[in-house]
Image (tube, rainbow, N blue to C red; front, side, top):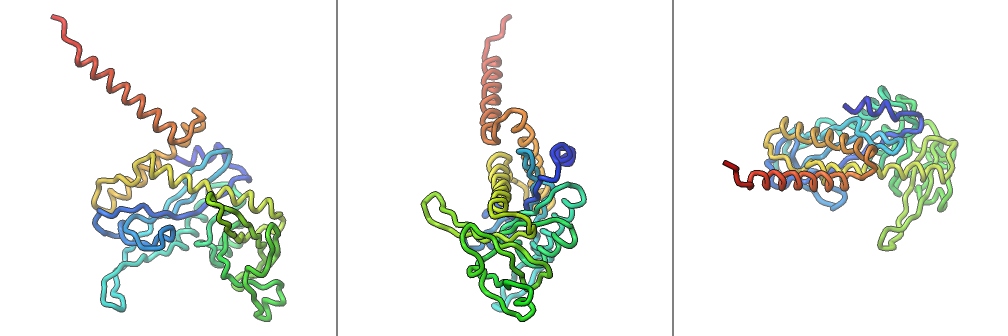
Length: 298
């Protein structure tokens, strides 16, 4: 269903965005799909479904090209004797699966991801196996070498000491054979609190402005998460077993795809489209009720 739409908008300016999200399901029984996951947004474990999505962004459209559900299908006993679950497939493996799938079917230049997926294995996979470039956020505790000679001598320093604000610098990561660019972006949130973001880029030809501008497109995946949770009934599955639950979640994502096409045709966002459909449905129900309420003529 999605591929014909992607073919209409794909070109070399497209980007593939990978990110995960958790939808809480506190009142659903635990199984391989609905279980406990650590949510970094609230800094604690929550019960729900954890899924990794790939979003293709180009020409104003954001289309999901793949989704992997994190299933904790392996039970084990921890040090305290409690039974817990873990996944046989890590999120990093899901990341590489989604990137490889996108590479086989789409044209794009950059893979965008947050710091959770900015490990050396993923970076190497994108550049060497998929022949694409990446722009990823990196945590400030990462160590880098300023030159190839420093890397050979094992001389690494903190990423915070490598680059100043609004500048880029070529550095080496320990597990990578090729250099990458590091850009430091300082921003303020809605409350005026300053934050720092370190961006790693494998395309050495980009400037600071180009890196930060391209990485801003990663926010589209957050809009996707918000829309499927608010507009397509993603969290409202009444099912109790894994297969129907997964089918419901996939159906919600397909509903998002239809809203995305309507967004272009009607020049309205997903929330406006949902409100418009609810208003029209209410009017139709009211007219039907009025019709049934009219006295029958003998």
